[in-house]
Structure formats: structure tokens, C-alpha cells
Image (cartoon, rainbow, N blue to C red; front, top):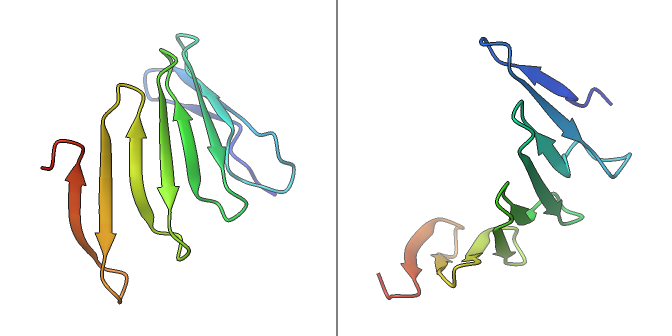
Length: 99
């Protein structure tokens, strides 16, 4: 399956990738040269559902039945919502403050 297991940057820093599904090429975690770890969860359709950064902050993602990202929810309570037209084109982005 040719999955990426590690990358080496020009400065020699290595980022490692971990997978929990033997049938997917989407990583469930990365760890960089400093030991900082980030984790991801994916839907069965390959859509990002959540991302946890190295500080433990979680960002969740919602998708519509067409696979388009409709909302991003940050742990701090901030959310962003996206609307699409009938052709699937992004037509509006608003946050929890109405902007």
C-alpha cells in the first residue's frame, strides 16, 4: 500500500506517521522531531472528523451528505460554518460571531 511512514526535512528533523487502519493511507497520528504528537480521526469516506494538536486542543469537522465540510468546531468554543450552492461551490462562510 505505499504509506508514508516518515519524512526527513532538509534540516534532518524527522516526522513519523502512524496508521491504525491497515486498509487506509490516512494517518491516525504524527510525531515530529520534538516529540510533539498530533492525532486525527477519519470517516469511512476519508473525511477528517477531528484533529488533536500537540497541546491537546481538539478541532471537530462536520460534513454534509456530499462530503463537503460544513462546520469547523474549535475547542475554545469558536465555530465556523460553510454553505454551498446546488453545484457544490462554497458561497458563504460565517463564524459564531456572525462574521
